[in-house]
Amino acid sequence: MPYICGKCGLELKDEELSSIQGVRCRCGSRILYKARPPVTKKVLAR
Image (cartoon, rainbow, N blue to C red; front, side, top):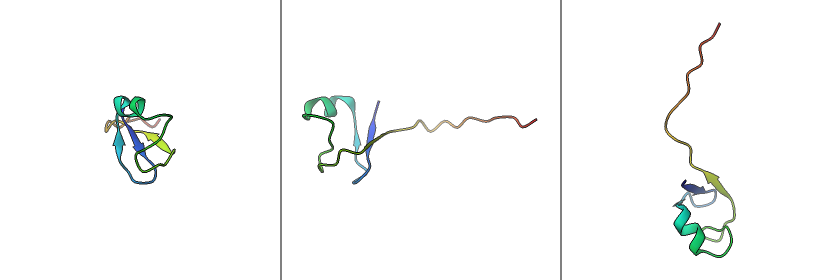
């Protein structure tokens, strides 16, 4: 599952995160968001 850095916007994969000690981006930020799939859910209104 890819993650996106909150500071620089770089997309990181699981393999890249495991190679870096701790949970950090290359820019040094520790704020990472899970990338959401481009699929949207539709809910019918009643």
